[in-house]
Amino acid sequence: MTLSEVIDDQFLARYRALLDAEDEAFDELEHAFEDGDREHFDADLCAWRNAVERKLSYLHRLGVVQPPTISA
Image 1: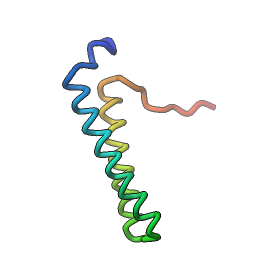
Image 2: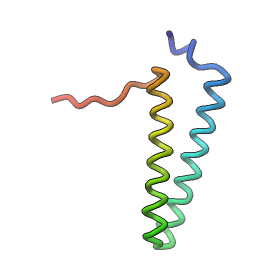
Image 3: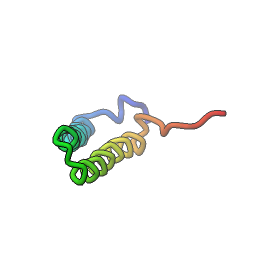
């Protein structure tokens, strides 16, 4: 399947939702950092990482991006 076959309105809607979730999680993380609230920062960092992982998993599953590799 080519990239142009993967990217359609459904893909873009799902990807936009994943980006919005990541952005919202990062905003919360940023506020906790600025407030010096370590407890919320740790929880928000975990939420942000999960949002990024969901986005990357979606892109990997569709073959849009490949998982990173380690080369020696």
